[in-house]
Image (tube, rainbow, N blue to C red):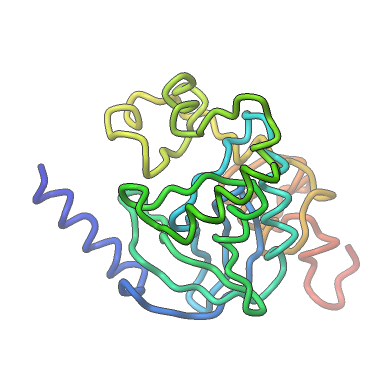
Length: 228
């Protein structure tokens, strides 16, 4: 089983065309939650999980606030991506920066995510978390904030795509309901044609492609010279 899993991870790395430690610049076209974004590269779209942090789930208190915090920093912008790995679900695990700002660290400093490095040994991130706790900022202003890894244990049925911190058995048993699709359903919620195509391909839905021609949100995606 371990050999199979190792071979799977290697194949994911090769398929994604990104080696561990690689750096590149890409445009963020969607922010899925407080620690996950979708970027556009020359060879297609890639989902990125921010390394070393764990943000509240969408259904948790401050889940949407954390997502909006991340969106304010990166949505629609060119970001520098420093990849660390590709996880077993095909997501790139990486650090993001924009205009010299460490995005992962800033989510911690704002109190919008927990530090979640391997063995909780990232001293810089832990110092920022303690600063946010003292202020208190974001989730630390709550009387008893629940870490998302604990929340997921209590609400496994809400997970459509397992977190890196969720075991394989939980991932297999989880239902297929997709909170990503539930978060955006209308063209008025889309910020770009790339984002509209992503949601149409992943979620379908007549609200994005009312005439069924395969082109979502004509006001964003109509070919030049074609009236929306």
